[in-house]
Length: 628
Image 1 (cartoon, helix red, strand yellow):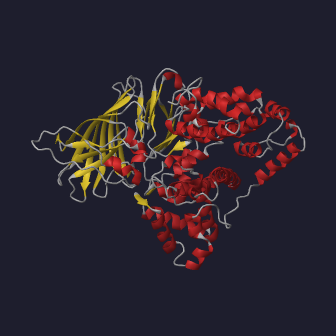
Image 2 (cartoon, helix red, strand yellow; image 1 turned 180 degrees about the vertical axis):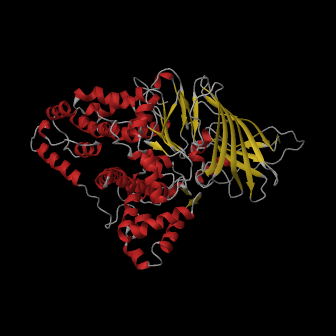
Image 3 (cartoon, one colour; image 1 turned 135 degrees about the horizontal axis):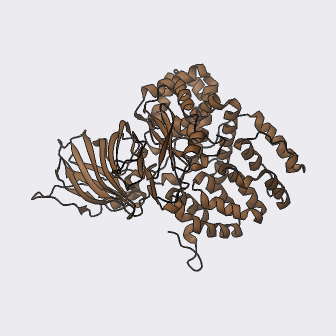
């Protein structure tokens, strides 16, 4: 983070102070894991928010009151902010001196507040800026119901600071309460205890009793309804989708039971899912008690519910035991992907799990191809330095992390590996974990000091080096073998209607479409589309279909391709299609034209990823659309 330090020493804007002689407020002199906070000196242990959601002006305003643990007897506490307008700051109810440093790149501005060793509380009155990157405001036209506006937040990785001042790093955990004021007829939900019905006052109370890191703060407000699924589970969504969502996720209670059998008691109370409007940039976000999910998952046949299994598994890996820094991101996502696959096996069978593992390996191979298998970002333990964490490829954290844990499972057997995992989460619940601490724990509890076996399994190569070691597990699927036989038949000229595809799920269709030789002739693509109607299938299948369309310049499918790019916001689905378009000058020009229309409806996280693919900052002023 060294390049940020000069800006931190700039002249500070001082807040008001009623004392005759203003207290000195010293800004932080370094940045740790993308945060100005010094929670090793003064840590926030609890936050109480009183917020008003203003759709007319697209801002969130109110107060955040912080309970402090002044471990070092310090005279200043630091918070992270990004484009926030700070209106007032008090400590224990009295005016406090405060300062804002200059805005620095992705980090925002440090808010530094003078305190006394005995200070118990600091209250910040603030409002969000119009471009808060962790907040997406949607007009009624951008929702399913078309009648009411909608807003939701996305705090990971360091976006919480754009809608509430906080100590925005995964290593600090705190509890929170909130009071949220919203317009009449709308419901507010958070990553906390939630109401299930609207009230006439439009004021909702929330409590999160378990300590969480800031990236798990979440808020959504809209025309939202609730459907109960089980005694601890339910679904929130817009009225027009809530029944479909409840049917799609009807296995939530079974998922909970399977997860608890493997990982131990669920420690968050309820587990509900909020299905958001299409612009949501991810498949799901593991906000505790309330997973945020893309509507793309509502496929009608439960074929995409592994995303929900994944987010539920985060209730242990990530939410319960959290990566201490973003360099240790694999401790969240590799473990969660491993648990997802194990739970898939319990819920849907070994074959389903193996198909999911092979599709994950496909994504990992694509990242190896794009970024280079020898790229150090393909290691599990990252060295981010001062780079933007959200510009780093993440598939290795998920899929290489999964394969590493599967190697340990296959090497030790489930009878030993599963109790090790259970003890790991029991021992470190509501704590943070670094890669180095995990390795030490693993050597002691799993390898039991057997250094020869540790070396034989090349554990250090898995964790600290890029690429896949030679002892990587090899998932196998008989159902994918059958798909491969149909690919071979198609390549030899078999008509689409004569292919043996009965009973295929999204998994099989992805395997088939991903492995067609490119380009397929337009006549053969027409035969496939006329027979199977890929353009009406779910978006995950379309993600595999449209690269074939683009490679063949199959113009008849371009209206459907454009609609695909305009109607969803999940970055994982969009990026491969834009990448394929960008391979040719003609495709790049067409993609930029569509993107100019689609971009305003995408979340900033998706925009960031697609801007890079399309070199959006190079779009010409004359006759083009400038980046926003």
